[in-house]
Image (tube, rainbow, N blue to C red; front, side):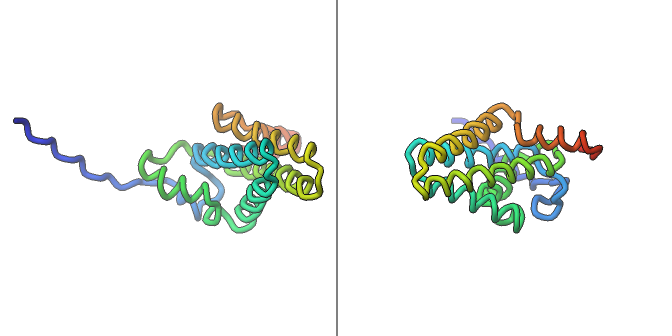
Length: 161
């Protein structure tokens, strides 16, 4: 009979940036994790006509943008549960994903209001646009809002890293 091999010792996560204090950078995988949640809720709300789901996305984005990552539920899941198991990914400038979240807030907020006022077609189109772009970004890493930020920053002479 062979004996079970000893369990490897747990190696503590060594972060180069604190996710809740170093707000100028972000683990490049965190926005994709958040985009998955935004995309799934937005598409579900748009397809089913459950406009409150779009409102939940808008409120979560507003809370995150106002109070920081510590109050972002998908961010907490990623930084507290996922990242410690897979390690920190490459760091990137946090301004482009923040701008993308601002766009997501504007569109999901408008979609939720449209749904609440009985404008189902407008709500569905906006919700599907946000959800589709968020899921596309989560799957491919190509964030349209991030690229819009970089384009605007370049036109204004602001550097992005």
